[in-house]
Amino acid sequence: MNRYNDIEIQKDKKGRRFRKTILLPIIEPSENDTYIVGMVGDRLDNLAFKYYQDSSLWWIIARANGLGNGDFTVPIGKQIRIPFDKFGIIDEYNILNDIEI
Image 1 (cartoon, rainbow, N blue to C red):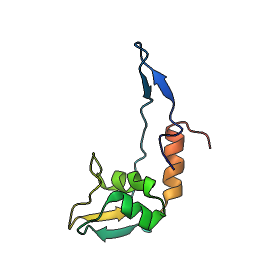
Image 2 (spheres, one colour):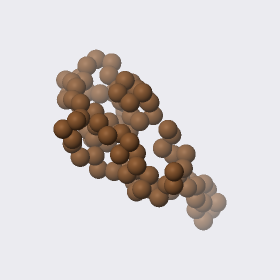
Image 3 (tube, rainbow, N blue to C red):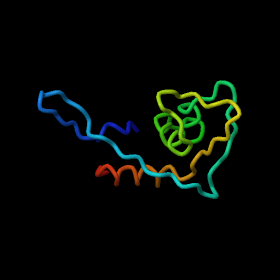
């Protein structure tokens, strides 16, 4: 799932193309979430593949933990929350960005 595929492309007054700003859902903790401690070599995309079988869902883990501002690495020793309900989060993302499935 590439979260930008369905985001509308717009043009500015000079004809430059850009994608509409996307909104990310707030991801509240759940009793079903998994918690890990960041180890050497942990990356958001690798964790997304391990827990969701889809590395493109790295943004869910990043959003839940305030990570990923240009860096996929996970801080060593930091507790990381892996949200359980990826489908609910994706559905909320689609609603926020007016994406029809």
